Figure 1 (cartoon, rainbow, N blue to C red):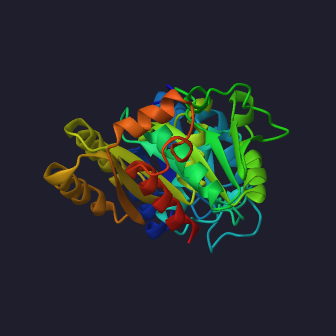
Figure 2 (cartoon, rainbow, N blue to C red):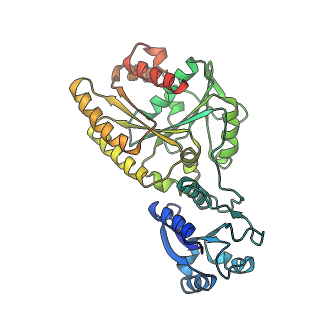
Figure 3 (cartoon, one colour):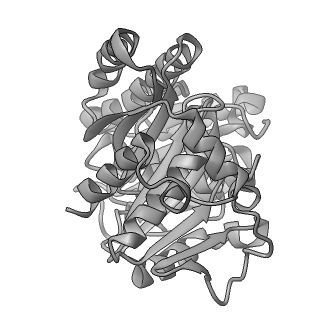
Length: 366
Protein backbone atom coordinates (compact mmCIF):
# COMPACT_ATOMS: atom_id res chain seq x y z
CA UNK A 1 0.00 0.00 0.00
CA UNK A 2 1.39 3.41 -0.91
CA UNK A 3 1.79 6.10 1.71
CA UNK A 4 -0.95 8.18 0.17
CA UNK A 5 -3.50 5.44 -0.51
CA UNK A 6 -6.60 5.56 1.67
CA UNK A 7 -6.74 2.43 3.87
CA UNK A 8 -9.31 -0.33 3.58
CA UNK A 9 -11.18 -1.52 6.65
CA UNK A 10 -12.54 -4.80 8.00
CA UNK A 11 -14.96 -4.66 10.92
CA UNK A 12 -15.58 -7.51 13.35
CA UNK A 13 -18.07 -6.15 15.88
CA UNK A 14 -21.23 -7.85 17.09
CA UNK A 15 -23.13 -4.84 18.48
CA UNK A 16 -24.97 -3.50 15.44
CA UNK A 17 -25.15 0.09 16.68
CA UNK A 18 -21.42 0.26 17.40
CA UNK A 19 -20.49 -1.47 14.15
CA UNK A 20 -22.80 0.78 12.14
CA UNK A 21 -21.31 3.91 13.70
CA UNK A 22 -17.72 2.82 13.03
CA UNK A 23 -18.25 1.46 9.52
CA UNK A 24 -20.51 4.35 8.47
CA UNK A 25 -18.14 6.99 9.80
CA UNK A 26 -15.07 5.59 8.07
CA UNK A 27 -16.98 5.05 4.83
CA UNK A 28 -18.09 8.70 4.93
CA UNK A 29 -14.43 9.71 5.33
CA UNK A 30 -13.60 7.97 2.05
CA UNK A 31 -12.27 4.68 3.43
CA UNK A 32 -13.43 1.43 1.88
CA UNK A 33 -15.11 -1.04 4.26
CA UNK A 34 -14.38 -4.31 2.46
CA UNK A 35 -15.89 -6.79 4.94
CA UNK A 36 -18.15 -6.71 8.01
CA UNK A 37 -17.73 -9.93 10.00
CA UNK A 38 -20.57 -11.16 12.20
CA UNK A 39 -18.51 -13.79 14.06
CA UNK A 40 -14.97 -15.14 14.24
CA UNK A 41 -15.60 -17.89 11.69
CA UNK A 42 -16.72 -15.42 9.01
CA UNK A 43 -13.73 -13.16 9.72
CA UNK A 44 -11.27 -16.02 9.54
CA UNK A 45 -12.84 -17.25 6.31
CA UNK A 46 -12.65 -13.84 4.64
CA UNK A 47 -9.00 -13.35 5.57
CA UNK A 48 -8.11 -16.85 4.38
CA UNK A 49 -9.83 -16.37 1.00
CA UNK A 50 -8.76 -12.75 0.43
CA UNK A 51 -5.19 -12.63 1.66
CA UNK A 52 -4.01 -9.72 -0.48
CA UNK A 53 -6.94 -7.50 0.51
CA UNK A 54 -6.62 -8.42 4.17
CA UNK A 55 -2.88 -7.73 4.22
CA UNK A 56 -3.52 -4.07 3.37
CA UNK A 57 -6.55 -3.60 5.63
CA UNK A 58 -7.14 -2.25 9.11
CA UNK A 59 -9.06 -4.70 11.29
CA UNK A 60 -11.42 -3.01 13.74
CA UNK A 61 -12.76 -5.59 16.17
CA UNK A 62 -14.67 -5.63 19.44
CA UNK A 63 -14.45 -8.04 22.34
CA UNK A 64 -18.12 -8.97 21.87
CA UNK A 65 -17.56 -10.79 18.56
CA UNK A 66 -18.77 -14.41 18.91
CA UNK A 67 -15.84 -16.83 18.94
CA UNK A 68 -13.13 -14.22 19.37
CA UNK A 69 -10.20 -14.73 21.75
CA UNK A 70 -6.74 -13.29 22.23
CA UNK A 71 -5.23 -16.51 20.89
CA UNK A 72 -7.34 -16.23 17.73
CA UNK A 73 -6.29 -12.61 17.28
CA UNK A 74 -2.63 -13.54 17.66
CA UNK A 75 -3.03 -16.05 14.83
CA UNK A 76 -4.06 -13.38 12.30
CA UNK A 77 -1.83 -10.50 13.39
CA UNK A 78 0.55 -10.95 10.48
CA UNK A 79 -2.30 -11.31 7.98
CA UNK A 80 -3.71 -7.76 8.37
CA UNK A 81 -2.03 -4.40 8.17
CA UNK A 82 -3.02 -3.35 11.70
CA UNK A 83 -5.72 -4.13 14.24
CA UNK A 84 -7.61 -1.87 16.62
CA UNK A 85 -9.67 -3.41 19.40
CA UNK A 86 -12.63 -1.92 21.25
CA UNK A 87 -13.97 -2.96 24.63
CA UNK A 88 -17.69 -3.42 25.14
CA UNK A 89 -20.02 -3.51 28.11
CA UNK A 90 -20.28 -7.28 27.67
CA UNK A 91 -16.51 -7.88 27.78
CA UNK A 92 -14.30 -5.88 30.14
CA UNK A 93 -12.54 -8.67 32.06
CA UNK A 94 -9.04 -8.14 30.70
CA UNK A 95 -9.07 -11.14 28.35
CA UNK A 96 -7.77 -8.95 25.53
CA UNK A 97 -4.75 -6.66 25.28
CA UNK A 98 -4.78 -2.95 24.46
CA UNK A 99 -8.49 -2.36 23.99
CA UNK A 100 -9.90 1.11 23.46
CA UNK A 101 -13.20 2.44 24.64
CA UNK A 102 -15.61 2.92 21.74
CA UNK A 103 -15.20 6.57 20.65
CA UNK A 104 -18.19 8.73 21.47
CA UNK A 105 -17.89 11.07 18.48
CA UNK A 106 -16.92 11.03 14.83
CA UNK A 107 -13.86 13.21 15.45
CA UNK A 108 -12.58 10.94 18.23
CA UNK A 109 -12.98 7.84 16.07
CA UNK A 110 -11.29 9.40 13.04
CA UNK A 111 -8.42 10.76 15.15
CA UNK A 112 -7.84 7.32 16.66
CA UNK A 113 -7.80 5.50 13.33
CA UNK A 114 -5.60 8.17 11.71
CA UNK A 115 -3.09 7.64 14.48
CA UNK A 116 -2.83 3.94 13.68
CA UNK A 117 -2.49 4.62 9.95
CA UNK A 118 0.29 7.13 10.53
CA UNK A 119 2.02 5.36 13.44
CA UNK A 120 1.35 1.61 13.30
CA UNK A 121 3.18 0.84 16.57
CA UNK A 122 1.07 3.24 18.61
CA UNK A 123 -0.64 1.68 21.62
CA UNK A 124 -2.86 2.97 24.37
CA UNK A 125 -6.02 2.26 26.30
CA UNK A 126 -7.98 5.45 25.70
CA UNK A 127 -9.14 7.44 22.73
CA UNK A 128 -6.81 10.46 22.35
CA UNK A 129 -8.40 13.57 23.81
CA UNK A 130 -7.86 17.26 23.23
CA UNK A 131 -5.15 18.51 25.57
CA UNK A 132 -5.94 21.22 28.13
CA UNK A 133 -3.16 23.80 27.89
CA UNK A 134 -2.16 27.38 28.55
CA UNK A 135 -1.57 28.41 24.94
CA UNK A 136 -4.16 29.01 22.26
CA UNK A 137 -3.00 27.29 19.08
CA UNK A 138 -3.96 28.75 15.71
CA UNK A 139 -2.92 27.01 12.50
CA UNK A 140 -2.98 29.13 9.34
CA UNK A 141 -3.50 27.17 6.12
CA UNK A 142 -3.78 28.23 2.51
CA UNK A 143 -6.61 27.30 0.14
CA UNK A 144 -4.36 27.07 -2.89
CA UNK A 145 -1.24 29.10 -3.60
CA UNK A 146 -0.25 32.77 -3.29
CA UNK A 147 -2.98 33.55 -0.77
CA UNK A 148 -0.77 35.50 1.64
CA UNK A 149 -0.97 32.74 4.24
CA UNK A 150 2.62 33.21 5.44
CA UNK A 151 2.31 36.99 5.50
CA UNK A 152 -0.82 36.71 7.62
CA UNK A 153 0.78 34.21 10.03
CA UNK A 154 3.88 36.38 10.54
CA UNK A 155 1.97 39.61 11.04
CA UNK A 156 -0.70 38.02 13.22
CA UNK A 157 2.02 36.69 15.51
CA UNK A 158 3.63 40.13 15.65
CA UNK A 159 0.34 41.86 16.47
CA UNK A 160 -0.34 39.42 19.30
CA UNK A 161 3.12 40.10 20.71
CA UNK A 162 2.43 43.85 20.59
CA UNK A 163 -0.61 43.14 22.75
CA UNK A 164 1.90 41.68 25.24
CA UNK A 165 0.86 38.11 24.60
CA UNK A 166 3.83 35.75 24.54
CA UNK A 167 3.66 34.23 21.07
CA UNK A 168 5.51 31.44 19.27
CA UNK A 169 5.51 31.44 15.46
CA UNK A 170 6.15 27.99 13.98
CA UNK A 171 7.24 27.19 10.45
CA UNK A 172 5.03 24.22 9.66
CA UNK A 173 5.17 24.32 5.87
CA UNK A 174 7.73 21.57 5.38
CA UNK A 175 7.23 21.35 1.63
CA UNK A 176 7.90 25.04 0.94
CA UNK A 177 9.17 26.84 4.09
CA UNK A 178 8.93 30.61 3.75
CA UNK A 179 9.15 32.35 7.13
CA UNK A 180 12.95 32.34 7.42
CA UNK A 181 13.32 33.72 3.88
CA UNK A 182 10.59 36.33 4.45
CA UNK A 183 12.32 37.63 7.58
CA UNK A 184 15.86 37.06 6.24
CA UNK A 185 16.79 34.85 9.19
CA UNK A 186 18.97 31.76 9.50
CA UNK A 187 19.34 28.99 12.04
CA UNK A 188 15.84 29.34 13.44
CA UNK A 189 15.74 25.72 14.57
CA UNK A 190 17.15 25.40 18.07
CA UNK A 191 15.31 22.78 20.07
CA UNK A 192 16.83 23.82 23.39
CA UNK A 193 15.77 27.46 23.03
CA UNK A 194 13.17 29.29 20.95
CA UNK A 195 14.62 32.05 18.76
CA UNK A 196 13.51 35.43 20.11
CA UNK A 197 12.86 37.88 17.26
CA UNK A 198 10.93 40.66 19.06
CA UNK A 199 9.57 41.40 22.54
CA UNK A 200 7.09 38.62 23.43
CA UNK A 201 7.68 36.94 20.04
CA UNK A 202 9.72 33.81 19.29
CA UNK A 203 10.22 31.72 16.17
CA UNK A 204 11.01 28.08 15.46
CA UNK A 205 10.66 25.35 12.87
CA UNK A 206 10.31 21.62 13.36
CA UNK A 207 12.61 19.32 11.42
CA UNK A 208 12.24 15.70 10.41
CA UNK A 209 13.74 14.29 13.61
CA UNK A 210 11.56 16.50 15.80
CA UNK A 211 8.42 15.60 13.84
CA UNK A 212 8.56 12.17 15.46
CA UNK A 213 8.16 13.85 18.86
CA UNK A 214 5.59 16.44 17.84
CA UNK A 215 3.29 15.86 20.84
CA UNK A 216 6.15 16.35 23.30
CA UNK A 217 7.42 19.50 21.57
CA UNK A 218 4.00 21.08 21.27
CA UNK A 219 3.20 20.30 24.89
CA UNK A 220 6.35 22.14 25.93
CA UNK A 221 5.57 25.11 23.70
CA UNK A 222 1.99 25.28 24.94
CA UNK A 223 3.20 25.54 28.53
CA UNK A 224 5.47 28.50 27.75
CA UNK A 225 3.39 30.76 25.48
CA UNK A 226 -0.01 32.43 25.38
CA UNK A 227 -0.41 31.93 21.62
CA UNK A 228 1.12 29.59 19.07
CA UNK A 229 0.73 30.54 15.40
CA UNK A 230 1.58 27.80 12.89
CA UNK A 231 2.10 28.47 9.18
CA UNK A 232 0.97 25.29 7.39
CA UNK A 233 1.16 26.54 3.82
CA UNK A 234 -1.23 24.94 1.34
CA UNK A 235 -3.77 22.47 2.74
CA UNK A 236 -5.02 21.31 -0.66
CA UNK A 237 -5.33 17.53 -0.58
CA UNK A 238 -5.98 17.66 3.16
CA UNK A 239 -7.78 14.31 3.35
CA UNK A 240 -4.75 12.49 1.90
CA UNK A 241 -2.32 14.24 4.23
CA UNK A 242 -4.26 13.07 7.27
CA UNK A 243 -3.44 9.45 6.44
CA UNK A 244 -0.03 10.16 4.86
CA UNK A 245 2.69 8.57 7.04
CA UNK A 246 5.49 10.84 5.79
CA UNK A 247 6.93 13.26 8.33
CA UNK A 248 6.01 16.23 6.12
CA UNK A 249 2.34 15.72 7.01
CA UNK A 250 2.88 15.49 10.77
CA UNK A 251 2.21 19.15 11.56
CA UNK A 252 -0.95 19.29 9.46
CA UNK A 253 -2.36 16.19 11.14
CA UNK A 254 -1.50 17.47 14.62
CA UNK A 255 -3.18 20.81 13.89
CA UNK A 256 -6.38 19.22 12.58
CA UNK A 257 -6.67 17.12 15.74
CA UNK A 258 -5.19 19.40 18.40
CA UNK A 259 -5.20 23.07 17.31
CA UNK A 260 -7.86 25.37 18.72
CA UNK A 261 -8.44 26.94 15.33
CA UNK A 262 -7.64 26.11 11.70
CA UNK A 263 -7.68 29.45 9.87
CA UNK A 264 -8.06 28.96 6.12
CA UNK A 265 -6.84 31.81 3.92
CA UNK A 266 -8.06 32.27 0.34
CA UNK A 267 -7.60 34.80 -2.42
CA UNK A 268 -10.49 36.97 -3.50
CA UNK A 269 -10.12 36.41 -7.26
CA UNK A 270 -11.80 33.76 -9.40
CA UNK A 271 -9.08 31.14 -8.99
CA UNK A 272 -8.96 31.79 -5.26
CA UNK A 273 -12.70 31.24 -5.06
CA UNK A 274 -12.33 27.99 -7.00
CA UNK A 275 -9.61 26.71 -4.68
CA UNK A 276 -11.65 27.65 -1.62
CA UNK A 277 -14.61 25.70 -2.97
CA UNK A 278 -12.37 22.65 -3.37
CA UNK A 279 -11.05 22.91 0.19
CA UNK A 280 -14.56 23.37 1.60
CA UNK A 281 -15.72 20.26 -0.23
CA UNK A 282 -12.83 18.31 1.31
CA UNK A 283 -13.71 19.63 4.76
CA UNK A 284 -17.35 18.59 4.31
CA UNK A 285 -16.15 15.00 4.08
CA UNK A 286 -13.22 15.13 6.48
CA UNK A 287 -13.65 15.26 10.23
CA UNK A 288 -11.30 17.65 12.05
CA UNK A 289 -11.38 18.63 15.70
CA UNK A 290 -9.99 22.14 15.26
CA UNK A 291 -12.49 24.97 14.98
CA UNK A 292 -12.65 26.32 11.43
CA UNK A 293 -12.32 29.96 10.41
CA UNK A 294 -11.96 31.65 7.04
CA UNK A 295 -10.09 34.73 5.86
CA UNK A 296 -10.56 36.17 2.38
CA UNK A 297 -7.34 37.99 1.54
CA UNK A 298 -6.66 40.60 -1.15
CA UNK A 299 -10.24 41.82 -1.34
CA UNK A 300 -10.78 44.40 -4.10
CA UNK A 301 -12.01 47.90 -3.23
CA UNK A 302 -15.49 49.16 -4.08
CA UNK A 303 -18.35 47.21 -5.64
CA UNK A 304 -16.10 44.50 -6.98
CA UNK A 305 -14.95 43.80 -3.44
CA UNK A 306 -18.56 43.64 -2.27
CA UNK A 307 -19.28 41.02 -4.91
CA UNK A 308 -16.17 39.04 -3.94
CA UNK A 309 -17.17 39.11 -0.29
CA UNK A 310 -20.72 37.98 -1.03
CA UNK A 311 -19.42 34.96 -2.96
CA UNK A 312 -16.91 34.24 -0.21
CA UNK A 313 -19.56 34.34 2.51
CA UNK A 314 -21.91 32.08 0.57
CA UNK A 315 -19.22 29.41 0.50
CA UNK A 316 -17.57 29.83 3.89
CA UNK A 317 -20.72 30.01 6.02
CA UNK A 318 -21.78 26.52 4.93
CA UNK A 319 -19.33 24.99 7.41
CA UNK A 320 -20.47 27.18 10.33
CA UNK A 321 -17.01 28.61 11.08
CA UNK A 322 -16.14 30.26 14.38
CA UNK A 323 -15.07 33.42 12.54
CA UNK A 324 -15.05 34.91 9.04
CA UNK A 325 -12.95 37.90 7.98
CA UNK A 326 -11.84 39.72 4.86
CA UNK A 327 -8.66 41.75 4.32
CA UNK A 328 -8.53 44.40 1.62
CA UNK A 329 -5.79 44.25 -0.99
CA UNK A 330 -2.85 46.56 -0.25
CA UNK A 331 -0.05 45.48 -2.56
CA UNK A 332 2.12 48.51 -1.85
CA UNK A 333 2.20 47.92 1.91
CA UNK A 334 2.84 44.19 1.48
CA UNK A 335 5.67 44.71 -1.02
CA UNK A 336 7.32 47.32 1.22
CA UNK A 337 7.32 44.89 4.14
CA UNK A 338 8.68 42.08 1.98
CA UNK A 339 11.45 44.29 0.57
CA UNK A 340 12.57 45.18 4.09
CA UNK A 341 12.08 41.64 5.44
CA UNK A 342 9.90 43.14 8.14
CA UNK A 343 6.36 43.11 9.47
CA UNK A 344 3.67 45.59 8.50
CA UNK A 345 3.69 47.36 11.84
CA UNK A 346 7.40 48.10 11.29
CA UNK A 347 7.04 49.45 7.75
CA UNK A 348 3.54 50.92 7.46
CA UNK A 349 1.51 50.70 10.63
CA UNK A 350 -1.27 52.88 9.19
CA UNK A 351 -1.94 50.67 6.17
CA UNK A 352 -5.38 49.12 5.87
CA UNK A 353 -4.01 45.60 5.71
CA UNK A 354 -2.05 46.09 8.93
CA UNK A 355 -5.13 47.51 10.66
CA UNK A 356 -7.19 44.49 9.58
CA UNK A 357 -4.65 42.04 10.99
CA UNK A 358 -4.31 44.06 14.20
CA UNK A 359 -8.09 43.93 14.61
CA UNK A 360 -8.03 40.16 14.15
CA UNK A 361 -5.33 39.88 16.82
CA UNK A 362 -7.42 41.91 19.26
CA UNK A 363 -10.38 39.65 18.58
CA UNK A 364 -8.28 36.57 19.30
CA UNK A 365 -6.98 38.10 22.52
CA UNK A 366 -10.43 38.93 23.85
